[in-house]
Length: 187
Image (cartoon, rainbow, N blue to C red; front, side, top):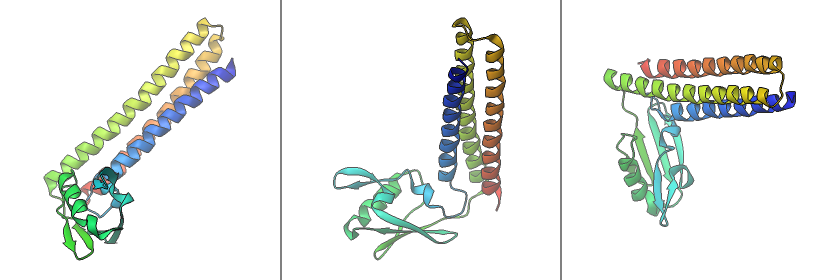
């Protein structure tokens, strides 16, 4: 029976960890004034009739802190890439330069920085909700297990354990958010 509670806790920990991974990816996509290839992760290019991630049809490099350089694998799709970037929510106008596309990362205005910080806070809050939901489901499962014969002290110990795991993940979310907010607000 103790192994059942351990398995329930392990499954919740896996879910909480995936919330952290998702948050990390989402925060990486939020532009903070520096060139970061991850801001293009959501861009899809029409490639032989299929919507394909930009990273699958071109190489993306950062020659300096304010520039992204996109080199398509096939020269003929350069216009498709430009169109995909313009239609995305990246908010940067691409500049075609021969066989490459340059994205100059403009400096952020104070208002835009606040908006990005607010967006980051919302992503962090969504991750916290996922972690809390995982904890709540474990606690409900543990309480049901008492009715199935698990001793109450085992259930209480498992609740304490999941609470500690929960608190650790919430701290990690706060740390990720604080780091991203600092990155965004640094001029």
